[in-house]
Amino acid sequence: MNGRIVAGVDGSAPATAAAEWAAADARRRGLDLRIVHICEQWPHGVGDFSTEYCAGALEAAADRARELAGEVEVTTDLRAGNVIDELIGESASADSLVLGSRGLGGFEGMVLGSVSTAVAGHARGPVVIVRGARREEYGRIVVGYDGSAHSEAAMQYAIEQARACHARLHVLYAWQLPVFSPYAAAYDSLLEKAFQHEVHAAGERVAPWREKNPDVEITDENLCEHPAGALIRAAATADLVVVGSRGLGGFASAVLGSVGHAVLHHVTCPVAVVRARQEGP
Image (cartoon, rainbow, N blue to C red):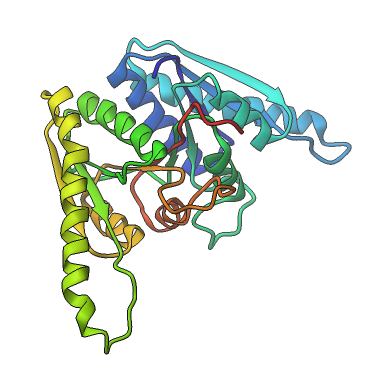
């Protein structure tokens, strides 16, 4: 991946945290950073106030980003339009797009806002959702990997992040056993063989990544449980969780799979949702 990192801001606390995360990431990876504010149309008669507020929110976020970005070039872009459409458009040429989990105007109890949900599902590249400032660092990045095209892209992004952060990369594969009647004892040995086959196949998928990236410490874990639950639990001691936008078994029309959706709603550390760039809209 190349290009620049783009952070979308709106003056909310999660957006400020997103700008901070984006600035630190740009500094680590030597990429330019652009801070974007999309000023939506406000009711008639408050247009001047709207523009003034948008410009102030943008500059405040950019000033904070410059404090953290070191020598990285930080530019700003203030424009009008539909927030979701404009941010999805930004993702086509950006290395990654970084957003807060919930912007201004969202209900207080909402963990994830409508903008971040929609953009994470439709963006053309990695989208990092940041809920708030992280007070503790673990030196560990977790990636969900099942061999699908989206998880291949997620793995590549996770390796780049692990290398830049000097962090360990933990590759997680969780496989849920099919449900049989409790009286079907004859299936026990078949299920055990099926699970061992999955474990072996998962290990074989990770091996080439280790060979190609000897400078990154890569561990892997194979679990017999729902992938969402496994990733949410692993996230408790992770600095970043990376998932593909849709894994194996997902419906072809689903732009954000159930696992990615669950992780975004339940994980408190930053979450990167990565979509394979060659896929069409």
